[in-house]
Length: 196
Image 1 (cartoon, helix red, strand yellow):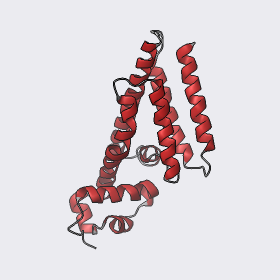
Image 2 (tube, rainbow, N blue to C red):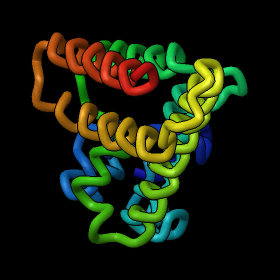
Image 3 (cartoon, rainbow, N blue to C red):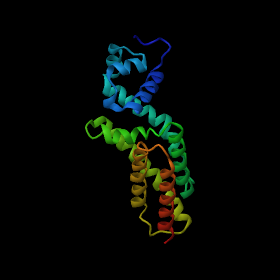
Image 4 (cartoon, rainbow, N blue to C red):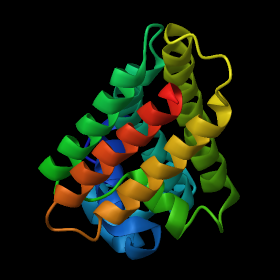
């Protein structure tokens, strides 16, 4: 089926993002992508250089539509520990609403980023941004508590790894209660580290 004239590049990337988020890079076939996006095979290759190209466009759309609003809490100038808590809370709530599909970036990290340099570059950029956001909020919190002895980088890395593990783990669940418990324990651990 040819692309309908009313479909913009943004529409197509959004449709492809939803499809890849559900099925992953390997689970989505060219045929299923043409059905999901409305592009025919020729247009898919002409506009995106094939499956890898449209997957990369989908990841960038996910970053624009999902990641950037989520990260805003920890990236703002006055962010502190409460903003980190709100970040995790909002992500769990969003995951519950959408059926716990995991984070598209975290899914990619475990499925295809180890094998495709372009995907790995996008994932690494995402992780660097998340670490920087956590560092920002942790540095503000440490300054507020007058703690100059805290290894902010190590704590930010710990939170980044925890976040990606949490979103990956969430894909195996039907009940989100353990996610809330983990989040509460994680925040308690960080608070204790900043206090002791």
